[in-house]
Image 1 (cartoon, rainbow, N blue to C red):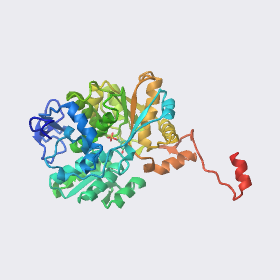
Image 2 (cartoon, rainbow, N blue to C red; image 1 turned 90 degrees about the vertical axis):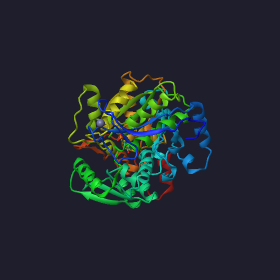
Image 3 (cartoon, rainbow, N blue to C red; image 1 turned 45 degrees about the vertical axis):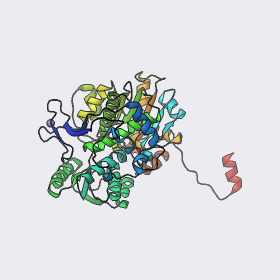
Image 4 (cartoon, rainbow, N blue to C red; image 1 turned 135 degrees about the vertical axis):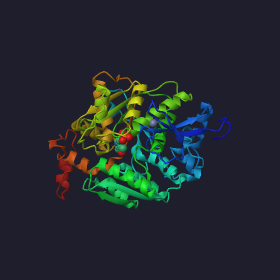
Length: 440
Ligand SMILES: *Cc1c(COP(=O)(O)O)cnc(C)c1O
Ligand SMILES: [Zn+2]
């Protein structure tokens, strides 16, 4: 960190998140959970006392820079996650730099005066996973790892494959056999990842990969990886920078494994601690009804895994979210809420986001569906300043879109989704008169 920002060198450690443990480890240890208690780990920085005014100016100046590290919407904010000792380890595909988009149409649907979307679908592989993966890949290279692995059928594998390829790492993707989403899988194949289909379920494969990782010296880039969380903090930093550090009242996001909820909360707390912002926005996490263990935890105080999570929003189809202790802490710290929404609500909200000219994948639309519910219940004030994070690109799941608009979409269990805002194509003869008639 440059000297005018920071007097003493920053110390980075991995610290156990469990309040009754708090064991600390070197930032270069290859750890995914605390060896003492099994708790989650997070990066902690001591001696981090930058001048917030200088920092804001530095971030703003870097936006005009062509230096790759500054042009990245993640590494531009690197003083706020200083875990690397050498930035030559960084692999960047110019991730982040995603827009804030206002949508009067979506606001009306949600029952608010205005809504701003922070659209992470504009990332290089089409989801916010890139914000975290650039940091995870950098840490893998810093540790001298040659191979990286993850268990995922979705955006994590697409992102990891791209960053591994760009950084000269071998990518290993483990999938439950026969449970593949083709849009995202095809990205992984195109980016050259070695893809293994295992005859087991997600949790069993995760256990298997942990054994293999230790045996073969493979670095795991699943969402529990603390460096991915560090990178995802940049979503909040960039959003605040784009708003000239004006804090919104609410930040709304979908919840699956809850890595993003953890990252957003940590980012906001840390930004507040060093004086970049003067208050915290409230976090609203939205889950799909068929995969809502965090909703239950928040409302009952008890954590139970969902044995067979079911939702067409596959990116949030998680029954046993690894980061729930962190996420619970962050939602409580911000005086936040957790909501759940139905498949129909997600589908209609998604169609409205599309109709606004924006578009997103199903999991992302849970935000607008949740906002509509929270506004109707009086939890979110109609005049509130709300930022909703759209997590993935509209083209990630084109099959879903086509089915919705042609009235063929079915929720798990064969429940039909109504095509409320359907928009079908029309077959016409090659006849100008008849087409004219049709269009008038
Ligand atoms: C991964 C993902 C999510 C879920 O994020 P978590 O950090 O696992 O809660 C939501 N939407 C999209 C598009 C994703 O790729
Ligand atoms: Zn511990």
